[in-house]
Image 1 (cartoon, helix red, strand yellow):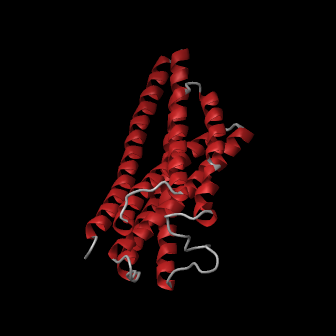
Image 2 (cartoon, one colour):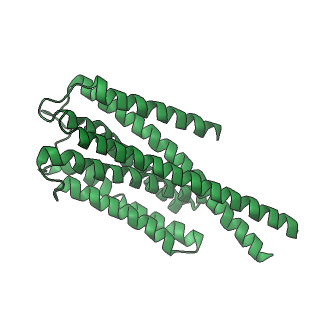
Image 3 (tube, chains in turn green, brown):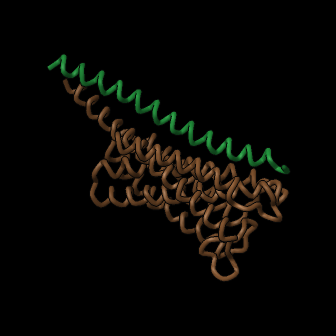
Amino acid sequence: MKNLNSVFAAYLIGWGAFFLFYVSIAKRTSDLRAEVDRLKSSLTRTK
Amino acid sequence: MGKRIVLGAVAILLVIAAAYASFYVAPEERTMGLVQRIFYFHVGSAWAGLLAFFVCFIGNLMYVWKREPKYDWLGVAGAEVGLVFTTVVLITGPIWAHPVWGIWWTWDARLTSTFVLWLLYVSYLLLRTLIEEPERRALHSALFGIFAFIDVPLVFGAIRWWRTQHPSPVIMGGPGSGLDPTMRKVLLFSGLAMCVLMAFLIAERYVLEKMRSEVDILQREAEAQ
């Protein structure tokens, strides 16, 4: 199994990058959703 | 939301199947051996990255023409997703190259044009952080994105037009090029899987940008009161 480490590293880093990117999108979306809710409720209260 | 979940599930199933096919269906390459299996992941990611930049380019062109925010959201989604795929290409390439070429990197036309492409889209995203006003930010980044896309045909053509350390094309490479039929099928399937994953990530990133725009509008409303 020559170069198994290289294959393992390439796939691990690649999938890790996609996974972390997806997690970052999900986290940013969830933060923004909370911000939208907060702004909407504050606007409704002031109306 | 429902369609995005279905797309995400399909993308996950396809990439798992593509990884399985890369290791258990494709035959082992005679000279390079096991390390050649990086090829399916590396090339699939490269195709998906270039396609994401094309999506960004279409978004940029449409924004300049129509000036509708949805095209700006599409542009930034394509750029960011394309950048992630290109980063994976720039990491997996040297990991594959080192055991085969004996070097991690060389400044040949394909590798250099890909690195320049990566730098151009990093600049595109940095430019967006420097301009506060939304319409100005969208227009300037759309114009820069149209310029940045000029490098995509250079990346595609580099291994066709110039002699490079990077291998010659195995698909659409002209006479003398080609792959074992099973390898070709696995490569095309891996490319498809990565493109579906790319479409899913663009859809998710588009929604994020749309929500960011909604927050901007609500913040302005709150400030005006």
